Length: 165
Image 1 (cartoon, helix red, strand yellow):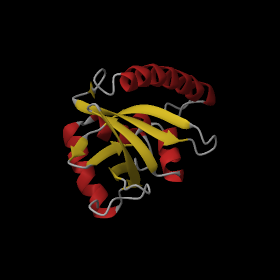
Image 2 (image 1 turned 45 degrees about the vertical axis):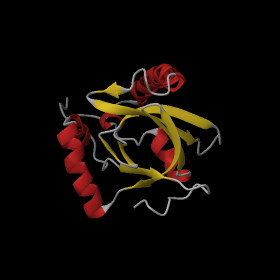
Image 3 (image 1 turned 30 degrees about the horizontal axis):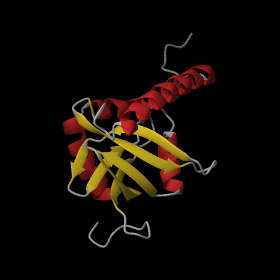
C-alpha cells in the first residue's frame, strides 16, 4: 500500500464544491446587502464582492474574496481555491469575460480583470505571501501555478481606463 499523497477523489471534490458554494452564497448575500460593511475583512485582509458573468450560463455570479493588495485603483486577487488542483470558477468566468463589478468598503464599481505574468506576478506574489503566508502553503499543495489577478478601473465601455496599468 502506497503512503504517497493522492489528490482528492471525485466524491471528495464534489463535497468540497457543495460546501464551498453554500458558504460562499451565504457570505456573499450578507456582504453584498451591506455593501461590504459586514464581513468586510478576513484573515487581516479586506474582502471584495466580485461579480462575474458565468462563462457557460451568461448569468451574474457573485463571490466574496479576500484581497491581499488594495492600492489606489488596483485590487489584487489570488485564484488559490485553497490549494486545490483546479482553478476556482470565478477565475474561469473572468478569463472568459474580464469585465467585472467589485464591491469594496461600501463602494461598487466596474473593473477589468487580467492575470499578472512574469516579473509583475513575481513582485506581487512576494507582497501577497508577506500579507498572508497561507497562500504559499496553498501553492505547495498544487502543481498548478496559482494565478494572481489584477482588477483595474474600467471606462464607460468596460475597457481598462486610460490611467490604469
